Length: 289
Image 1: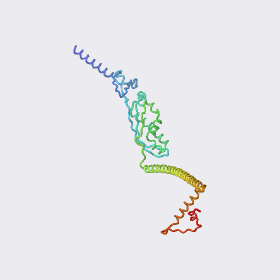
Image 2: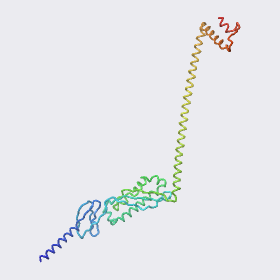
Image 3: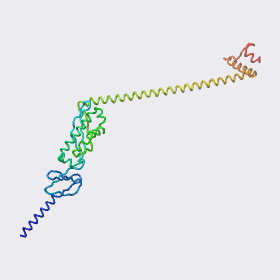
Image 4: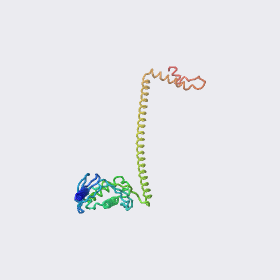
């Protein structure tokens, strides 16, 4: 009898332990815990630690709480002028509302990625479809990703999904038209360079012409100033001569000096003898007449 009671006690203890274990729910820091009752989510636990649920009636499942990466399959997109490009992109996302996520997507990560793939592909297609190929290439650093994010908007919020970032790993041209596009881009860059060169040469010519004009004006001013100084010097010279001739004594002396200069100039060669007629101005100057 005692043995039977001891067995019953052990069974009861095991049953209590099983009930206790099946009632405890452990939630990690990087996950949500969903408590379901008859398949319906009745409670969401979003903080780490231990909690309880009704044993056998309720069951627990988890969803990731951290930021997730989804890598889209490379796909073709068409530009505004109907040119094909190949886009390879990825997104960072997280579950923002675990209850909506469970109700709309049945807590399926695969279903979530399908929704993300559709939304991102459509937004990328619409964005690139509104741009030319040159605009797509020039805007691939930041602007294109921003435009795609704006196009997606809050379309995924209804599934409890928040899209944190979109970016293009690669946006390339099909192999059959890479060469022609690159050649056209090189030609356009060469045209731009030629335009800049022509503008630079034109500006340099204007500067040279302006400088030459300023130099010519300065030279002209200097020559005019020199002529004024020469004229002033000649005027001063003439004034001095006039003063000399205004006095009779000075006039005679000046005539005498000039006669000596003339006589000296006429003495050439080794023969220094000069014969002058009496009525010669030089002879008269020496004679004091």
